Length: 238
Image 1 (cartoon, rainbow, N blue to C red):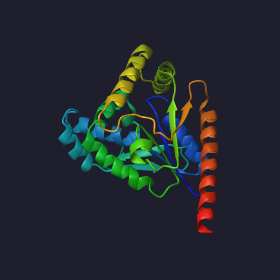
Image 2: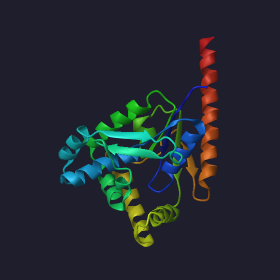
Image 3: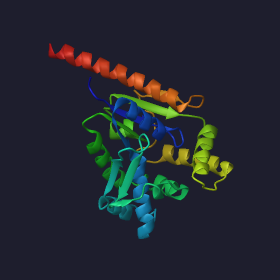
């Protein structure tokens, strides 16, 4: 059965990473966390003293940065190690500060050009689950299965708040909701690769669904697409 490119897009806190990791595990696909790439550039910019308003410097920084995503043997399902120029920054890029900075870095066309090229190279052979804001609309518009995952802002804020609580981060739920609204606005209104639903994407609202339910639904859709593509290929080869 042909291996697909599965693109999962959606707003912050909708559960894209959790879904992508689980779907990849169930299908035996490679999971690619595109958000980790932007977070890594944001972290490096902070370390190097590069302003988030300096578009040219940020683009140059991205061009000279090496980001490796590695699946660790025996690690928790879908867990990836993120290496920034050879340094393990897996935990360092998950702070609220880096997340906010990454959303600004992602607005820079030069940065996106560099990272989108890397993402395409990583997924061009298929058998991948890639998640982000513009995977189905820009990075892989030819992806065989596109999912637009969403949930209410309140649910997304609660999920993000609980995630940080579990890590011991002291953040306020009301403030988290404000940040969710701000990130949504920024992602929708950015000039370069705004957050949009691809025309042929399947919308999945996870507001009232458990993560495993969502994953099983997407796996079912993936198998249907893979089967249909295989049948179509056989017909053309007759």
